[in-house]
Length: 542
Image (cartoon, rainbow, N blue to C red; front, side, top):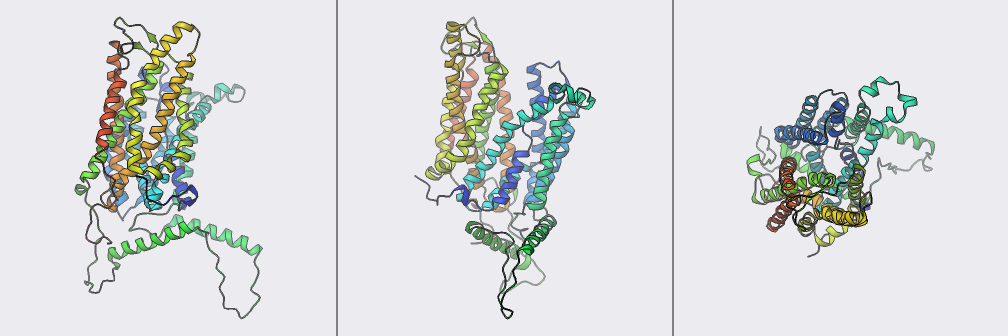
């Protein structure tokens, strides 16, 4: 059944300025920052030891998130704090962490640094909450969530390139930086400072331009917004004074309307809805105009306690999303390690299902396979995703494209078989064309499925939230569960892969991931799309 909602385009999106700030936040958030600096800490580390230490650093971040997720989300949901202050806190923590990253001299310093950032940084979950409250209507959600996915994809593509260029600045430009002792001792501090500069710019954008979206804090005094509006107003008045024409009629009683900012119809309608909603929440806090007010008492706003968040709809959606992230985490680490494994002939090899080793690709060849994902992902997310979601609906699209993952996992290990068969006949360096064709087919299919499944899962989790007052906690719980299960999937995937390669079954880990993915597809059939307000509390608007 096609979606019955009105079709919208990118031009129709409300509050584009606010969404731009969140796009910048997701782009500037550090992606993979640890593996490069680990090599600098100890140049004798093998690739396996780097992977192990990198996993340890990521685990420290996840543990920090687990310890603070409920506390951070409670702050974001509290009218005493709100969303904006939590985003400022998380961004400030990232600035400090990123600035110190390149100065670490020991592996354990890196672990502590990432663990502390995990404790204070709840930006991903809070940003998802802010996005849903900015766009308001359900018809805008799909484009809003895919926008943040595009920002993260773009950051993942560009940050390794920029970081690699900056980290090797002294060696690549010896005539200018050969005598710079700081760059020689701390080669990764320069890219870390660039990242910190981006985060500082993001912090200022949040402080001066992002509006508070908490229903009970909308319209409250905001010093950052007040300063930015004052500066913009002064700038506008200066420009208008150059072309100002006085009214010809001295007796005219007409007033000149000089709007602070032009808005389209969607923005105007959305602002009116926000004002009405904010007025309702403020009345709930104690400004209610009831016919028979109770003197000396204020009506508390409706707030869903944590124990009531765990509705059947939310728990089922959370479980399916977490297990899905588990096999995604397993495949991510399996794919890179599998491609780098050299070809091998085991004693018990028996094609097509029992074989040892991988295609033995070089790091540059592996990088090329990963670039396919980014190159195809952005146009799919920008042009194809919104149209398909509008036609099929969120839940149906999520279930449909999820079914492609078991097929991808099942086919992926046969890259080694194709490489072994075609290399033995050509005896040429590099990978034969047949291998590249199969890899391109796998990666394009993967990103096509992932481009629909991942942002749609964010939207469905948001709609499974049982009450608007639990929105930040819902996103925080989902984000932490995703991180934990991704780490669990990566660890289990590595163990199964190690066992399989030693028993002439390189494809075992991939096929186990395919079986788990197939189970997730079956569980997804039981999930239902919510409306974000399953539980009604006293004081809720009818």
